[in-house]
Length: 136
Image 1 (spheres, one colour):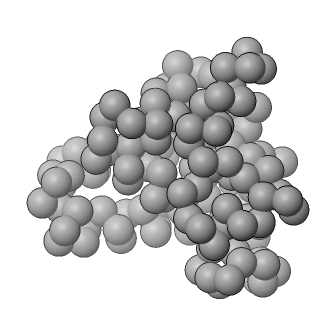
Image 2 (cartoon, rainbow, N blue to C red):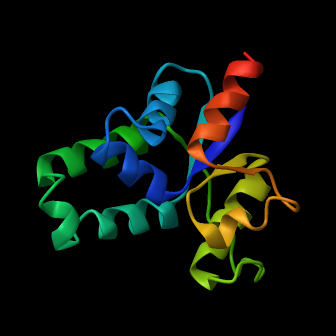
């Protein structure tokens, strides 16, 4: 199984170690699925991790370590140039295009993406973990 984790899932995983997003990150670390990332995903995540409200809860060293772990351990796919407009939030279209190009599920907590589940394999973190448990 391949999956793209929306940056909001990664950030949630860093903020709440016992919650479903953190368990999804642990499942990747345990080799239960192949994590797909792209330069744009890493850029978005890197920017978000510098926001003052997040920096108070995720120290710079932890943010840097998380970015390095993802860059070293995940499969980096190229960004899809000019992704088609599909989401109510155009900033999310690159995630849909990345997941589609990589033939991967998308794991997100974003309501603009979750409403597209009838068109794409999109899961919340908890749903993705349930799916992994049923198929492994």
